[in-house]
Length: 219
Image 1 (cartoon, helix red, strand yellow):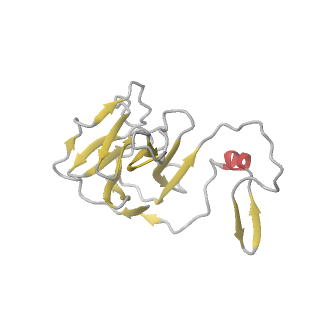
Image 2: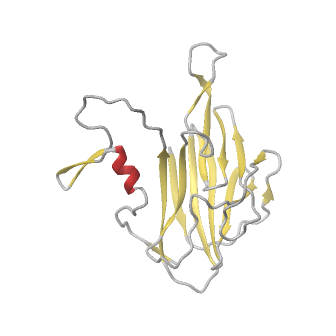
């Protein structure tokens, strides 16, 4: 379960400490728009109930393991994994970001490499674009498998724009060649009293289109 909060411009977090103990650097070229020198990293977390990591490339939570549960009754069997790393095969991850109707605003994407910092028990990712707009995401484990995720914007530019935060769950798969005798395979919904059905191929084709417009926040 996740709670997502969007906050207006706030003062920068003070006394931020670069994570060194539990970060594993990934040997790959950075794709950050603003600072190509930053390398993608994993920021680890662990407690009695869960352990895993946040991937700084794309600001993705893609590695959660349930420490108290095993895939089999044998205590030596592997622990249950909820997600799959986005830099591996068949990624399964949770990603947070922003969308805007203003195409001139430079937004972080799934390829953006964020700076990773730590304040107490909070994992802090931040990225500043060329327009001097700073985006920040905070991950905090609260209790009982609950994460609190805060999305903050520091607008240090002279620009005014509409923007909204989003959170998504993305699961990629390799389609096999088996065929099933079923009426429908894929997501469905009832919208305006009409049945809407999408195949998985439809979802993949439409993945880059914006969802319906909710209320926007102006900065």
